[in-house]
Image 1 (tube, rainbow, N blue to C red):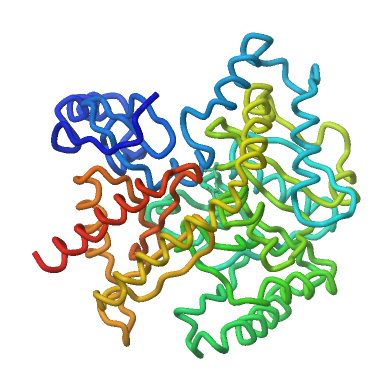
Image 2 (cartoon, protein in one colour):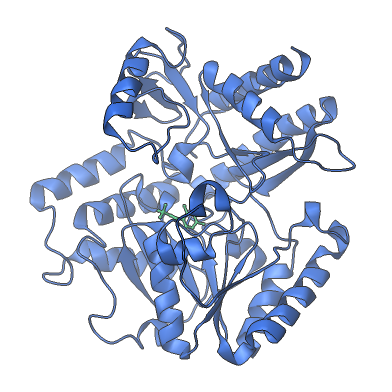
Length: 445
Ligand SMILES: *Cc1c(COP(=O)(O)O)cnc(C)c1O
């Protein structure tokens, strides 16, 4: 057991981590960067312990993955037991029950009461690619619509859907075709003002699809119900519903990419639940299996079952160890009511961040739901000029003090908070104290 306590033994990163970072530079491609190069040796709950014995408070969950916490008893037991039984057969060769059970659970938990089917993959990007395959196959159409600030992964097809050039797309093209981009309903930066965002964005987007692609050529619209890497952008209330309804009227599939927002992160099982939106297809990954690499596409049975046998799959997709972890993770979320816990975390985070906003003009907006909260920093509240350098400086000050924070946003000026849902209130408050201190040193010197 690791005590749920921050400990600073050395500077961060300490000498052992620095030596490891030197080795990293000699062994690992520069393309794979490290946000906070304190090398982790152990983790539990809300704490990560590094090679120098420092204990860091985790406000990132490895990008919304370890929602049930590292060192989770149910995950350890389920994974160990499965490893002892067998580690791999390939479901497409010799199937096994845990794969079927994960699909059953996904079909139950995702929005919509109708019959559903799922298929399992290894990563969020792979799930998104497969959702696109399924949508094109089912509709017989090619066009896929994605949004400004979208992030759907780093494979070639998903890079075509991801919005941000640096670092994701830069010089990695050419990208897959028949991918179209429309503006995101981003209330804080909507030109006509937040109160007009839902209606104007909906009108503009559907006009663009009509004029530039044609509904009859459009297979699917894919959206993150709360955008992740793009800046935790929450579309205005009613927007997703209106868009999903419009898609249905035009035989266009509505795909929700819940890879980051899913599995209790937003305070519901899925971020779509809050808006009462039932997507035709949903992609999940990240929080699904306590850190084991698993992803899924879940959707209407009539859509998912149009695919010919052998049309979907992969060697590792739905590996039995990852499935055991997913079942243990879902059980933890149910038993410990982690969706409700996410809402408690929201109350603590937003309460404390509002205090920062009252003190510092640089806080432009606080947004998000559940344990998926962000703070956008600006040079000036009127011009809303993004404060990217300041965001980076505050982030660094947090890291030096033993708080693992993440930034995001197309403009690099958004702090995002994604603590494990099992983190204690005391660690949350201590992390927020550190954030306050980081603001003070970065802004007041
Ligand atoms: C992280 C992410 C992906 C890509 O997932 P990987 O497992 O990194 O391939 C796709 N969509 C969203 C919304 C994500 O946050």
